[in-house]
Length: 376
Image (cartoon, rainbow, N blue to C red; front, side, top):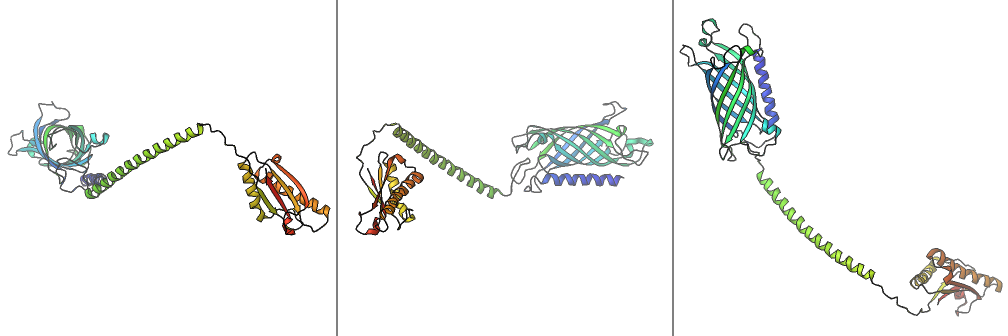
């Protein structure tokens, strides 16, 4: 049972170590060590007067900080002999303790310890008691499993925080009963331990005496910081250029608004007559696609000159009889008008059509298969 409990304590310690060291992978093994000396009193927890049965205790501890929150302590305390015996100490207690920094649990570690900190401690160890402690009626040279739980009230002093003065109240348990091979926390087998100590923190590889969030990629980080600074400067320059461009836009917008607000008298120009010719196929009043550019030019002119009107005269070539050619010439004029009205949204009031029958406008008879549009 004793071996199982010690093995369990070792497994818990290793699991905490793995959980905490992932925070800082670049610290070296020789970093974050400290050593301390302690002194104070121990006295039974129950059935005894506090000071009457108290005896002095002293010891040393070696500490390893694994993260801003978690650390390990190897501690050995000796109770000074108060009996007539050649032994200098009544008891020796060697322990492995786990330390949790409550300040850094509830408040993020700022890279440097504060003046005052509180740590919770707990762990197991080996308690050796000599024959003089129990007298003639007790066990001789007993070896027990011990446990400890308590608090460390730390005062970090000095400009470099190399020293810590700590007040350490705790309760110690002898985990094994005298008359049975079982393990438990029994108040009758427990003592108060109230000590104070001084701890010295050795200098780390980064020159500091306390846990620091050092990094093994300082060169890369410096390069990244330089890149970030360069990008920030470039962004600031672009912001200034953007602001200048915005100011230019605002000035141009103001000039545009001023131009829009000015009343300009419309310039009156005499409407010049223009002529547009649309050719048709024989006996057809359908406008071919090749003739659409001429109509498009006419529509553009009418849109630009809102007061202009157009007369569309339809013609036919001499083939066929006169009645047929008259009706064909009228259809050709209407065909051009319909396109102007339906496709170009030209008002029908601005368009006048007429059929001229057989045309003599062009010397070549076939060219007279046309609608001639004249603006006015």
